[in-house]
Every structure is written in structure tokens, then in C-alpha cells.
Image (cartoon, rainbow, N blue to C red; front, side, top):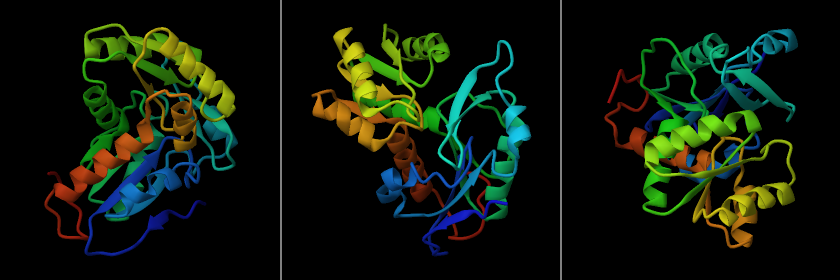
Length: 247
């Protein structure tokens, strides 16, 4: 059984629950957002932490179901159905609440559902997309996503948000080499993108820096989402260690 990872316990500060749709700990993610997390306590849980291989396999996307991509504890990649994952996601959120988190952040930029909760639940998609919209301004946006079957949905979501066309390319953050990520970034900038958004929690700061080295302005979902969540949690009333029912 996975033991939850608790960051910098200090009960004077608010506590944020970090929920990945894969397995915790996300050793690939935390170093990238450590600076943003320095102002809060945090607890990490994964939706798949308590499932065996057969249980995880049963959450694969069904026909017509949106595909999500995440990471297992051993570093391998897993595909999940956006609806199928809901009960396991609910369980991970409940574990955060049991660990006395005042707010939970779901670390996924895909559309995921969960049931009623006793604390506010933030979604990386909402936070990262809102901040990215501010960053791109009136410019042209290019988006990278993990797998080709997500491209249509990605374009529709971003074009609906921005009211103008976007360019998109698929490159898997968990399996692709840095050269492949750079090539995907060049494809969307060649199509006119001024800024590139790495639209999956799996994309890393190192991958963003590879794009920057090619003079491609880019930002990761993980950095924007965690930064936004910490800012919201830090500005909300709290008593330091009791759960808060809302803002």
C-alpha cells in the first residue's frame, strides 16, 4: 500500500492535497513545482495507488470515452478512460480529506469527473488554461498533447476558449525524447503559433527548456496549475490545520 507523501509539515500553514490520476509519488513532477509548494503543506495521493494491475487495466478507455494519460509509480505510462477513472479519483480525494487538506488539486488537464466533496476541489485544467489564456493574450497559441486521439478535443476546447484557431501536435511526455518534443514544438510554431502550451501534467520543465533553447516560448500545465492553486489556497481564510468547507 502506498504511504502518502507529505511535504514540509507545519500546521500553521494551509495544506494542499495533490491528486494525480496515476500513481503517487510523482517523482517526475514535484521537483518542477517545489518552489511553488514552498508556502504550503502538501499531501500527495494517486487515483491508482490502491489498485493492482488488473484493476488499472479495467480503467482503460472504452469506445467513445475520452482518453487520459498518466504515469505509474514505476515510470511507465498508462491510458485511462475519463469516466472510468471517476470512482478511483473520488477515493484519492477522500484520502486527501482524511489527511486534513483544506483544498485538493486534481493534477490532470483532461476532463475528469468526481462526486460531492467536503472541501473545495480545484482542477489543473481550469487553472492552467485560464492562466495560459492570459499569457497568450491576442497571440497565436500552439498546443502539445500526449496522444493523437486527443487532438480534435484539444483544438475544440482551445478554439472555444480563445475564439480563434489554434495549432496542435501530439507528442507523448512520458515516452518521447527531448528531440521529439522539440520537433513537435517546431511544427506548431511553423504553423503560426507564438506561444506553445504543454497541455498535460506529464510535460516537464526540462521539456519546456528544450523548446526555449529553440527560441520557442512555452509553458507547462504543471507549473501554471500548481502556482495558481497555491495562490488561491494561500489567499483563502484558513485556521492552519482544520479543513475548510469553501473559500
